Amino acid sequence: MKRIVLAYSGGLDTSVAIKWLQERHGYEVIALAVDVGEAKDLDAIVDKAVRIGAVHAEIVDARDDLAENYVVPALKANALYEGKYPLSSALSRPLISKLLVETAESMGAEAVAHGCTGKGNDQVRFDTSIAALNPDLKVVAPVREWPMSREDAVDYARQHGISVPVGRENPFSIDENLWGRSIECGVLEDPWIEAPEEAYLWTVAPEDAPARPEYLEIHFERGIPTHLDGEPMETTKLVETVNGIAGRHGVGRIDHVENRLVGIKSREIYEAPAATVLIAAHRDMESFTLPRELGHFKAAMEAKYSELTYYGLWYSPLKQALDAFVDKSQENVTGSVRVKLFRGSCQVVGRKSAYSMYNRSLATYGADDSFDHQAAEGFINYWRLPTVVYAEAQRSEAGDSCGGAAID
Image (cartoon, rainbow, N blue to C red; front, side, top):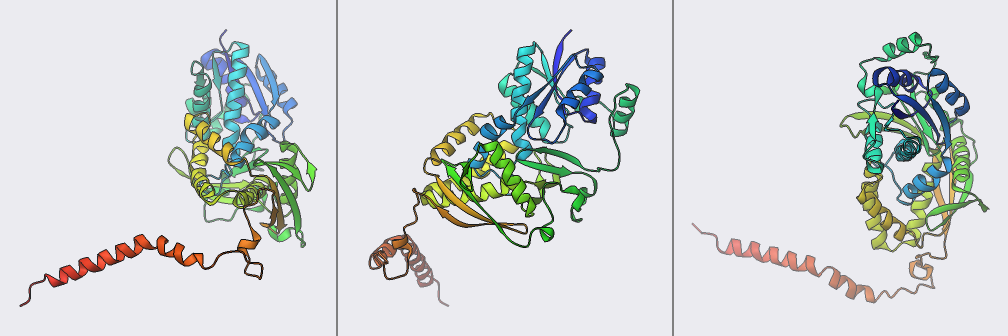
């Protein structure tokens, strides 16, 4: 029989998809569960896939892969879609796509499948990433194809003996990984209503956070966070640790009405404690170590980098070219940043680096000021020269116009 590899989460849609792919398309289904930092019992999930009818099910621990090869490049680019969203879900999709392709190639499958809907961003990210990695693989999206409503899907599951707990105790649609947690649906679809506390899991309400601030010292090597409070840490552990500490202080809550790739606006709630802290610290270290022109140009480029990631173009030639630029820009982004966490706020309060471009003797207004103040006058004369020439030309033109006017 022909084979297909399904990105399997254990939820309603992908559980129903196993039977639907068998009945509708005649596939042998291989279920692939990818651990990107979700708090799930993946052993139970793959057992469930086999019980439903998958011919094979496996788990891939991809947390380190996500951290090193997706989170780190995005952090070096200070990637925030529309200046707010740290792209947590968007970063995991090209990784899962890569694993789907690798599994399909190793298992002799002719197609891959995912559980995305027809109006979300993820369908584009999966389809585009898979095509970039292996354009010969067919992509099947059951939820996009079938005419079933959510109620129909529940009935279908019951008819086929698929145990899928569905109730009102959790009205939200949630996706999470190492870099962040996204929450949507339910009451959140009204953009005027404040997100209720039950939507949050990783962060406490700022008003309930500790009454005393906590400080973190984050050390970067060439733009990569390598130490936390002086202790060397692999990226995965460092991100997990900062998530826990910053979350206790209510840091990392994001309420964003964003422009989806498919053209609609969507209200999204995100929890991203580590992303919030690390991007703030990294951006500050860049401002400390990068020359002005490089820093300003990189800041302008970051919006495009974030957009490409959000749009599912992680494997595109432009994204790869931007990665090369970002890596070059990070050669001197080495040093330590001190961050203050207090009741929902994250504030950089100190920084040091052997590559610092801050020169105290030039910056100070004290007695040891080494700046040549007399040189400023000549600099200003040349700097303002185009402005002066333009102003004189405008005044001359105005005078000529008045002089040539007819007089009654």
